Length: 121
Image (cartoon, rainbow, N blue to C red; front, side):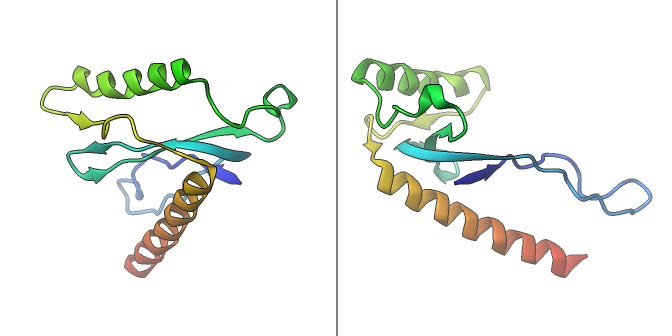
């Protein structure tokens, strides 16, 4: 599934000229998801690998220790920002089907958000 990295750049220049962000797309496949929450609500993390990398073709799941390492990094990364916390939902991992469903929901949200931006332009 192609994934696009969203741009954090402003949508307009100082003179009002509209900016169209550039997105690079990488064909990838989701194989799992880590469920967590932050102050704004559910914040699932979809794990993907590039489809073009033959070294990762075998990857369909992670070993339990690797999952713990990933979980730990998500649990501590917001400790660096004062006032931010996350709830890792007690280490809930989801399978490939759930991850792909989340990618679909994210795409639909992105399409709706782009439509709102276009209406305002």
